[in-house]
Length: 71
Image 1 (cartoon, rainbow, N blue to C red):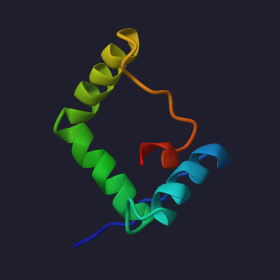
Image 2: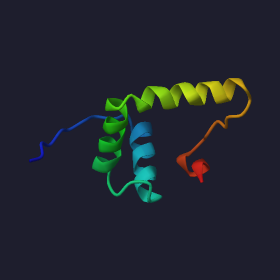
Image 3: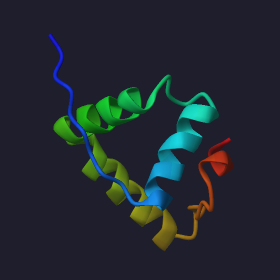
Image 4: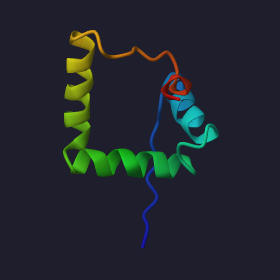
């Protein structure tokens, strides 16, 4: 059984989600948020953010201007 949840996003964040769906990273906006929630529940989101911070501090990271830069 599913429950519909409506959220409000600023236009800039909505564009990020739309771009992730358009480039094929996610099948839908719902799938984007389900994946985000799963990662958060697993504690991976915080670990991934910390790893990224450490990479940036060491000069190994890359600041992305767009999700397209992930390719």
